Image (cartoon, rainbow, N blue to C red):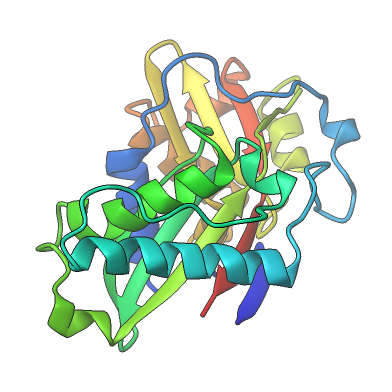
Length: 235
């Protein structure tokens, strides 16, 4: 098993942009815990506790077990695992990505926590396998070749800034995922999108356009902005 933080967690950029277009409509206020940019940890780590490699392996196994159970015709959740660590009950944003021979086969998740960490992994494992609208439902014949990757998100934190230039100075390419919101317009890019859009201005332009705003809307200084980080595990 491999674990990474804020590196390229998904095999194909198309997955990242599809997440933005289809899955990232979040109701209610952006973010959770409120803090200023100065309160973010300087090394790019969130104050949210990281998972250990053993815990990442357990979640990967749970994702595989959940999909396998559904392929066997069991519609209910798999039997409950014993002695789960307390961190699995925390609410975390999660993504599950499936690939076959390096090709994307499904990728779905939540930025804002909808349920406990383990329930999010189970739900998004099934979503990625059977409910990604770009693909037909996963089959038993394909299952043996599926590679699973999970991404665990920290809780979004509000980013305080004064104007467009100040916002640019506080962005951390390759480290932070960004959520923007203005009235009914909202969008996000995961940290991995910096791989495709390394320039800060270009990154914000695309993020605003995807939210249905003018590309330069970020320059006005009136967007709600939140940041988060990603810890990824793969088989």
